[in-house]
Length: 119
Image (cartoon, rainbow, N blue to C red; front, side, top):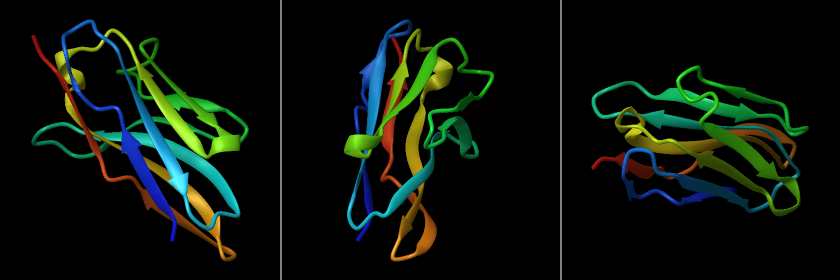
């Protein structure tokens, strides 16, 4: 069974930094596009950043120059380095990944991790 397990959420002061991790485990043939999403309180889930298997990245305008997405293909792990955090970054953060397993490609989600930016 494929699982995405997240870690790294916390309470941090404005201007601070956090790094989120997302580890993929299970019967995996290939991991394609991966991404980070977030859902602020009372709002819809939105994309934060995505990364292809070859390392090409895209970012939401609101996080450009502050957040960095990366992945370690050898260890099936994705990261989100978040710097210069703002109260507006407060949200439940989710990772996802398109994973090929048993010849099928399917989108999997992590369990979510809370990031709170507050003084």
